[in-house]
Length: 322
Ligand SMILES: C[S@@+](CC[C@H](N)C(=O)[O-])C[C@H]1O[C@@H](n2cnc3c(N)ncnc32)[C@H](O)[C@@H]1O
Image (tube, rainbow, N blue to C red; front, top):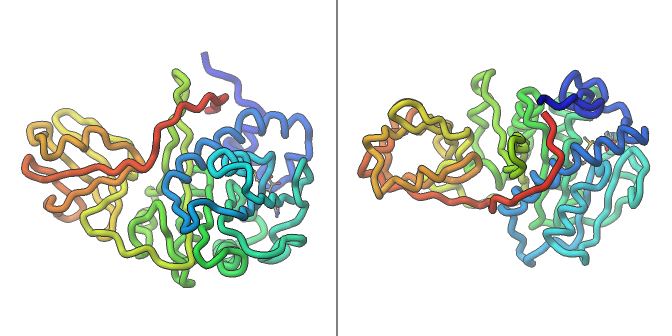
């Protein structure tokens, strides 16, 4: 039986009429948000944290921008411990919230010092009525330059809708042009290949092990001020679900040389490339010698193939929507 869509779901995912409206100041919408949407933020961040490393092992100070009901802060504490100093900013008051409007300047009123980790989860799309893409990119670049420790990381999460995801990719290219670096999910600092075709976008997926429910899709960036080494050209991020056609396995993958369709005919499945059977969206496949033709990588029986999965697939007991 299909579940009835709640107001918060309709307003943020469906007609999106609530976006940017201060909906969390209304008790019933806040309750719905906390029950339905906030757990999705937690699930997304748990996956992203699997790819983060800090010189000191863990972040000491964390800034949560557009904190809402505190999902990012809870995920931070769960992952990095209760000792983390957390500053949570939102324009709508709430428990432990520092009330400030992020549109009023790069450093929100009342926020001091620098942070090892900044999280802006589902905030940027709420600013698009006030700031165009250039403005949003300047704000993100400002957070990284003025609020982040030199070895810190800034995580930006956005809904995996085509428009919000493409907008995030647009922000990505602009902040890279401004000198920042993307540590994940991209394996390259070049312009995003998904922006070349209107129909493409990029998102990850956090598995939700509640029978019959869909996974939590999200788009994200991990930005840093200094560059990770340019990726090995034989490494590719899986940016689609596996497509199992008759007689072949396909994925879309993205790496230093661009975005490709990876294809292995079933008859070419071999011990050398069987790791591909386990590949999921978000994993990294390692294909040192696979032949590349136009936009297709053909994995043949002799192609050695490895798999790097950064994410532990956690069971997340959440109330799923959609
Ligand atoms: C979709 S919620 C995200 C909440 C939380 N980060 C999460 O992912 O669950 C967006 C949040 O951004 C806040 N917000 C929107 N515009 C803002 C602004 N100009 N300044 C500060 N917060 C803002 C909203 O009040 C809301 O709490």
